[in-house]
Length: 195
Image (cartoon, rainbow, N blue to C red; front, side, top):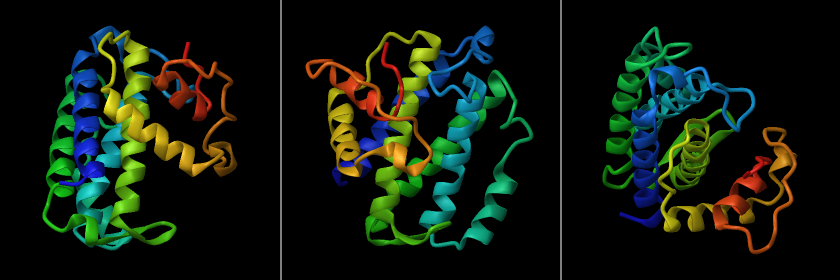
């Protein structure tokens, strides 16, 4: 298993731990991603991970979309509590199975931007699950930090991406001290205030 795959599996498990730590009164809390509540954030990750198996198995976007639509419960968007936890557990288990399949890194996936190497897609998913694990943990007051190797790998990836605000999907980077913890420097690059 290569580093990206192993870290994606680890990041998915980190998100799982935080999903299972959400209490019933926390689902509507706001998150550092200002557009989403805790329930919205978990719903977003459920969607992302529902797409992974059909895409990694070589389905085109339309067919993959049909698979995803059939896999979604009616509670993914706006659902709370045990429904979202169950949906996340199901989606993440299937995505980890797909990611760890033999030869997956040699495949190509059909994305809206066109055919993309699976290695690039999985790197983006690693970034996504890591930053959103921080979002979720921060929103609910989860004390356990993300693993150092996960943060270091994703931080290096984000530095290589360059200015994320140029994509239109992120706010401009937040200024933090050069000696700030690496997780603070990572989330600051995504336009999030680490404090």
